[in-house]
Length: 373
Ligand SMILES: Cc1ncc(COP(=O)(O)O)c(C=O)c1O
Image (cartoon, rainbow, N blue to C red; front, side, top):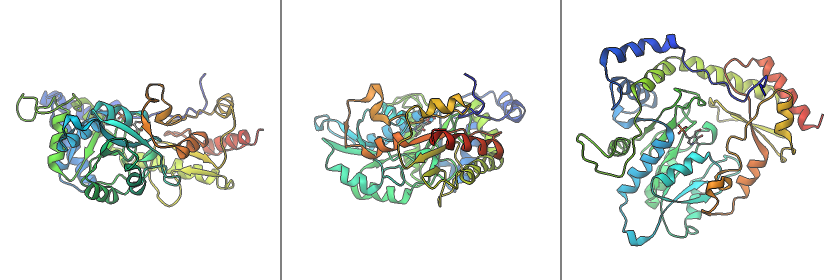
């Protein structure tokens, strides 16, 4: 069914915008393996986050970046095989890629519930969960829900106090992502605010760690062809770097588009105090996802009823990772908040080209459907 308002309609840089960068690739004849365009992306990202270029590495996608960052961190915390599984705590309320990465890095997941207000793990919640983990906890992956800012200083502090490796899944947090010693990993997937089709990057003020991540995304090689660590191939190609550079050129306009959409939704729903929106409230940030949350469960058949009226929606994280068919067997805390969010949250249409009138119409359709009209 073609929807009048699909939930997403990614709009990446045009061929004309990418062309000057493709011509550079023709000139350099360098296509992968940390070429000049990848170097330029890393320099520009470093400038954006106020760090040295050695603090940034591009990756092929955030899942590979998270895997490599966890592998790099786990290696630094060498353990005896008799110690049993090395546990990694992560929120149950996240996209399944977070869990894929934990497993790919050779760690044993332990699912923790999120905070009701921030939809994310908190350092306090993690500390109290540590005693319930059925083995040795070595790492934690806090997730920025749909691009919401996170407190990197607090996570670095937790890491220093507990010895846990922290890797922040900042997949959607390009706009207000904060950086510190613990690596933060960002996605450049087509559905993200800064989109290159596929791609990602990791930032940490610990340049040794960034080098270790680079090794883990490059077959374990660093400077020679000897595999020095468990590894994958997770490098960004020069072609994806070309799209990323064109996307960075357009970032100020792209940011305004997504910010305007979020504000238009807030204005359209402002009369209904039982509805909360993300992004919304005090911590303003640009996201390619607008999430609606109601204070009661969304009615049965809500998604289908909206689709019948031409409005696309998505349960971006389904019921959380504990509900994924492949992953129901892992150790976990009780997850009442995750279950609660899964029944109340839904992604609304969000893409460049949506006008304020479109958004007012979508909000009216959503409101009518919630009232059973
Ligand atoms: C929270 C979260 N983590 C990880 C990922 C994976 O990112 P990528 O598609 O770049 O691998 C996503 C992608 O949507 C995500 O939302």
